[in-house]
Image 1 (cartoon, one colour):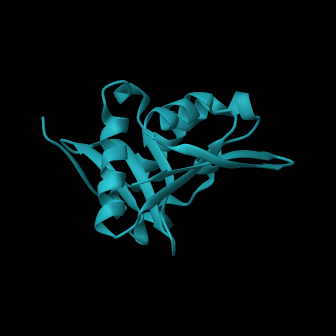
Image 2 (tube, rainbow, N blue to C red):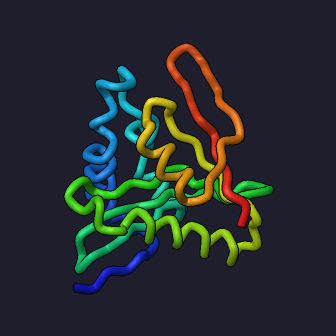
Image 3 (cartoon, rainbow, N blue to C red):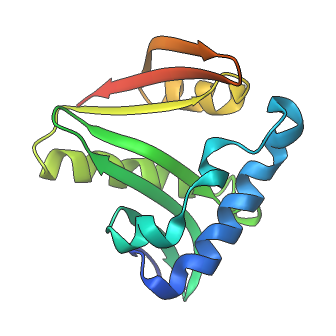
Length: 149
């Protein structure tokens, strides 16, 4: 099997949208609404060149949405299809994010996640991300994290 990370194309939008729904849908009961990644317009994000997919022989197994900010690379979204989880794909995508940040001259990667996604917070911590602050709004409780390269 051939697996590569490549820029998403317009034809990937249905698979990307379905993957995000499958990966994040489990959190709806926990947070009481669809998580932010489920609300994104993936056709627009793909069109802007912000999405990269983990492609295995034509199947989209994972994705990252990366946004270049003035002082860091924002890891806006990372997701792996539930059927492909626990196989190292998430870590491979995180390595890709670090390589992309370094190649672009960034010293920091920033991300945020919902406070209820405790598994993700723990994973990011094991990968070297540190909590920087929390934001609590009526329907939104986020943990912001960063990793210095």
